[in-house]
Image (cartoon, rainbow, N blue to C red):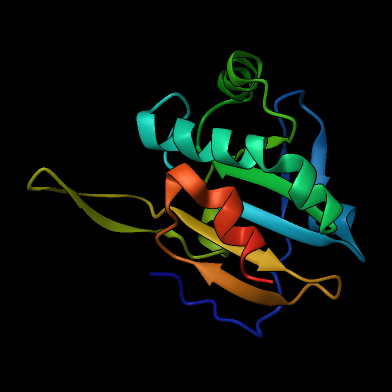
Length: 152
């Protein structure tokens, strides 16, 4: 779905996390970063994905990765989701779709025969130079942390 490809630079971004703190791409200068876009807090697949990343968090950190989740949910909704599932990483509230559009993960979807526009669940792995090294367009939500670690 995304038009971005491996080898592209990560788009510049700015957003607010669950605590109202501003986070930008510059916050991750010289760091490896996992940015995952997901449709909605507290839905089954999104919860599985967040919990898989939570469960693999220490191993991902040991591999040098920071993790950042992004959806259109509000800061307040993110704060509740983080608290409910003890998520150790920030979630950005992209209510105006600026990051979602910059990473080109918005578009037509189909669910139970109904067509609509929404966020395509996509994960970007970014190296220390800000270059996309992997794109996972249809992550396995139940083992997503392992998927990333297995990329090498």
